[in-house]
Image 1 (spheres, rainbow, N blue to C red):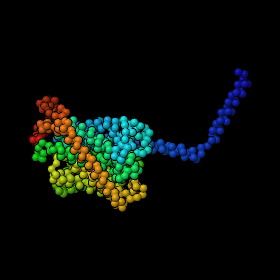
Image 2: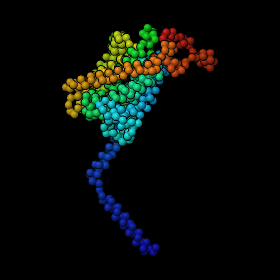
Image 3: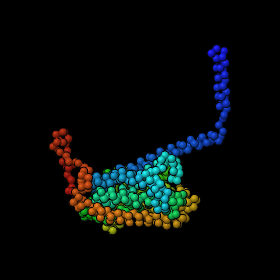
Image 4: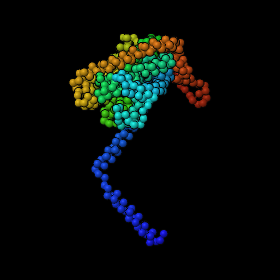
Length: 490
């Protein structure tokens, strides 16, 4: 190419590039463009924040079952049953997950009848990364699904406290799997699912019950089912003659602390967004638990002369149960009242009521979860306010605001949960008893302990060879090995 031609070509190219740059520079974005871009960025940030919050809450709720509930229950039984008790919580983390993935989520949250969902989400079909605007518009549908799974896991695990130390492992698996299918999944749909019978107006419910995080769905259903289990399986060998004290309060305290922390995910996560409602539920949860500890210990101290550690952690769990249905509807001061009342009511339930009726609810699943859940459900209808959650479009929410019918709705929802849990449990145990040759272990296996008889393992292997230890330079005080005789039931 000749130099003059090349120079002209380069000059033309440079001019064209400069002209294009000036034109582009001159295209200043309009206000509408800037607002749209800002809204898009804000929406993306909100979606990311909400999703991160919900994934953390899902992990917190799973932690409530394992290790929280496993440690709490495990410490309360005798040492020969610690592994079997913890295993009951652990195995449900696996079993319920599979049921949920195959059909449980669909029965709970797919479009269906007022009583149970359809098959639209069978095998999690259509449950992916896009949000489901009906349930949670700012997080992936899968995030909502996995969060709700953690509730389904812990609910049947709560029941195991009633029949601890005496139910066959195989029977426990069959019972909890069937119970989750015919009680929990349909009840979750009734309260939280689209067009559910007991759902809020936004979901098209006919009887608008207030249950923010599971007072009815989780605690009432499991607690009253636990009562039927305790009665039908009968008392443990030696109960109440032989002492059956917790073998490790340390484990139970650790478990209770994990439950307390995990409950923030349970309740605050039920806002399904990282906003002010989640904060309100978080505060209410903590206040309810704290007030219940005070209420339980105060009555225990006055009646029995000493405040016990067992009473303290039982009060905390009772308060957490009581505040669960109310956490997204009440003020902090109302949360204190609900927790305090629930703690006192549950104390009398596990002492006076249990003694008078004579049933053996091993770990007080009914006294804490059944009674606590029912108390919380009714008090939710009393203290709920539109100031916190305007679920009725500006109309009064709770009794104190002037909505007298809400107490009726709470009673109806509680009654349905109680009936479903108790009737289903009775039928399931009767059928399993016939099919499996009984659901309870033999007397010999019970005396031996379920760790060995059901799993062939022991929770503790603390036999020490003193002679060998002394040769290695480790010295022991002989008095450290002086122990009281084991109870007969051991």
